[in-house]
Length: 284
Ligand code: SIN
Image 1 (cartoon, rainbow, N blue to C red):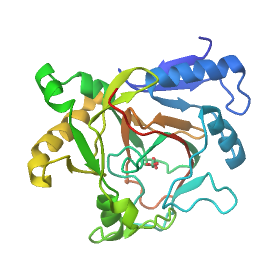
Image 2: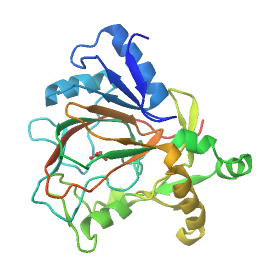
Image 3: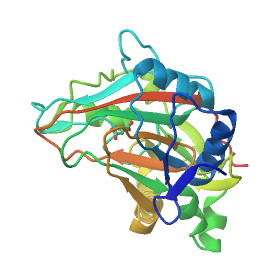
Image 4: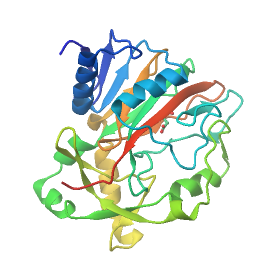
C-alpha cells in the first residue's frame, strides 16, 4: 500500500496524510477502501472540500444517501450542515449520545463523512467506540447468550430527548424534525451484526436508539443493555478525534458507534456531512 496510514487507536481508526481527496488515482482509491475496511474510522488530513467536492468524494464509496428528518443545505440535497453557533449556549447538539446513525431504520445508512469547516479553539471532539473489538472481547459464554438475540431500535428516545431535554433547547443549525410516526416504530435488528468488508462481527446497539431486547420488556432488558453500554465504551475500545483544520473524517456505522462532545459553548462549529449507502443489518 502506498498511502501513509498511521493508526489512531490500538484497534480502531487511522490517520491518512499526503492524499488529495479531490483527485484520487485508482490505486489511491483501492488503498483507501482497504484501509477503511480495516480501520473503520479514517481521518484524511489537509482536505478542505467544498460541498460539490465532498459529494463527488463520497460517491466513490457508494450511492449518496439522503438522511430522513434532517434538513439538507438548500442547494445541496445530499449535504447537511452540522452547525452550532457561538451564541447557542446550553443547547442539545446533534449526535451527542453514543449511536450508530439512524439504526432504527429498516436499512440504516452505512458510511458517514464529515468535512470540518470551522472549529472551536478547544473542545468539540468526536468519540468513537470499536464495536468489533468490544464484541470479540466478551467471554464465550456471553457470546453464546447474545449472538442469537435481536434488539429493538426506535427514533423515539432521541426524538423525545431532542424535543424536551429538560432545560435545554435544540441547536438551531441542524433542523431535525420529530414526531414522525414511522420513526417511532420499533424495528428488530440482530444484536450482533456482520461488518461485511472485514468479515468481523460487531455489537449493534446504543443508548440513543435501542429500546429493549426483542421479546423482553425494557425493565427486563436494562441489565443486559447497560452491561453492554459500559463494556463497549471502555477506554480501550474508544478513540477521540481532536479536529484539526482541513480534517475529513469518515466512519462505518456497521462497526462503530460515535458521539459528538458538547463542550464548546461560546464558539462556532461547522462541519458538512454526507452519508453513503444503506443496508439491512444481518448476523452473518
Ligand atoms: C454526527 O454526525 O453524529 C455528529 C458528529 C459531530 O458533530 O462530531
